[in-house]
Length: 299
Length: 226
Image (cartoon, rainbow over all chains, first blue to last red; front, side, top):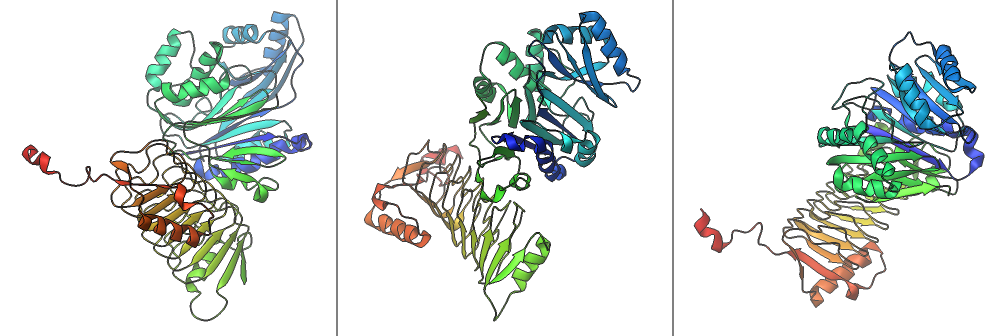
């Protein structure tokens, strides 16, 4: 069991309280996943030509300011680094691929857990309430976000095994379920050049989406092909630069519910997470169909 | 009417109060601030009228006997699971496994129901104003499932003696489920159920489905296999 949540604001007047809304949903799903939690918030885009990395250090001795200084020296442009404990955001005026290649070479102990112009990814082990407090989620503004509370079933309880998993520029995935062909799929994707940080099945799903998007498919198309290429159970919520998507496998034994008002669209494993949102009593509520892909975007 | 606020008192207190509400007194209850909580008004045995003023979580009205429960919103998984008698009405949509293994009574879903509606039903009557998703009436043994809209794939898979009426399209039929003749008696039964459910639909537009009886009955042609 795990819990997943997502909220997409239609009314930007709510943007200052996005983090508070997402936190309310996340904490309501804490008993579905009490061992670790994570979330992605889409907020404060960097200028065109720049990139924002969400970083996680596997060692406690990481020197974040030094990484910022080294990045400035390597690329010859100013770097902005904001850090909290083992997590940091690094913003820099260069190409995403160049910066991630440099990070992998210069700082192999630091994982890139989110990359794009808006996305910020935070994840940590521990009860979702302490994770949310650690990152001060309630204080984050933004346009939309997704979150995950994890009850690990098939791989270790570590930050790197936690969700969301990055799946490309400004794209990340949270997953409730389990995949049974992830080892085979991981080998196939590795042969196509994808790299993996863990033995986690959901990371493979994220890499699969990244690979399909890289091959030119739209997110909707990639999620439809996921239905036939991924063997197992899933409800996915996928965050994108301007929206989010929800997809379920053809059996649909992992729960999901969608709700919409004039002000927001939300998804959650269970309605009680959505019940924490303003005017939820008046929302249109329905269960997403098996094998169907639902997308919302500002475009 | 007795009002019970789930923001002010715990669910167990509500359910215990409903179980204890025997004899004389106000028979109408209104439950406010349900907020998707699970197990609201489960195990009812008293003939009360219970209104859930909002969206309910899992198993609302489960194991119901005698009570008439109305959910004024969405119902989560397993609404009216194993209902024995009485009525459960959902004014919004319902998630998966609505009225699963229900033995009697009437379940009305005014909107759509998710997958596996009426799975393993054993005598309950279910009327869905909208559509149902895949594997509805799977292993259905007895009772009637009425779907005014469309039915998803694998309708009535491995069905026994339950009866299915569908007003719209059927995605596909499951193993051993076939279309059967719609006689005047069947139309009369359907009209009666629609009237009981308070759902306005033209009974003449429905088709009937049931068991081909080839899956669960011994077939003499297979005698040599043993």
